[in-house]
Image (cartoon, rainbow, N blue to C red; front, side):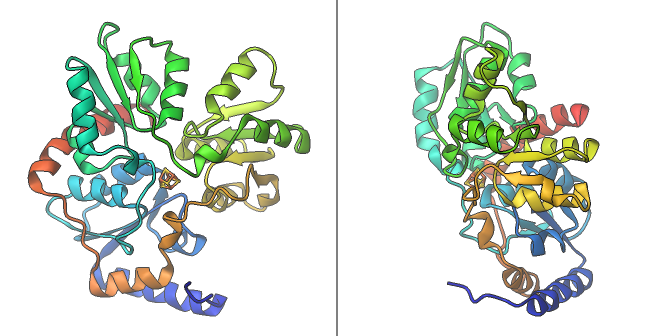
Length: 327
Ligand code: SF4
């Protein structure tokens, strides 16, 4: 168990991060679920799509990705001529690990004419076997753009898949039964309880949550009297920025609350987590002392074999191209 650091110790480590960043001409990209002290020293904080877009734009020789492993892999694929490092090489993702390349090959063999649509939370090898990579903010549009008569294999998140299927009305879409252990905890009962405890609040729900499809269904039937918005984490940030005076209950990993509170200014007491236990231990493996060491020693470098990177780059670039229009 890591030792608890005092505020002064954290500030000192943050100062060292800023110095090293300057000295090494490094650029730090962090996910919205990262610890506050990491978000505060990052050059960019966003969702996985935003991180990929930002990685592509940067011209720094050293890029540090503070997020889980597939995020660093995506940056490494997009920046083959740059050094991409991550402070914690064992920061995995239960969702990305819910399908292996072998399982996908077998699934594809059962549906040889299907279009393979993979969520961005997948390994580079799985992306290399996919036609499209999507995020929660563009999955609906990309599914709609695929001709009606083509079968679709959607992976690995079943909740996002069910949500997209419900919204698009797509019949010939097969969904892989994968899930993220953090988002799978959320139930429609959590939403009903929060609606009673926080009347008038807007619920911000991530489509990876176990309740998202149920919520939409119950709302459409008029059985859920609550203002629900289903958004990617990037969408949540944009929405809160545009509507800073409201009260919110947020159904995704709790790290986003710090990010949202920065948008809302002094109104952070109007932001409540739907469940306090929505904590991704993989995201929290990255600490500011590990970030200092990572910058000092330029570890851990993330490398994707060139033949995998070449194939995985195609669906990732397709995702970036489609997303740049709607963002
Ligand atoms: S919250 Fe879930 S999907 Fe996101 S990184 Fe953690 S395990 Fe993966």
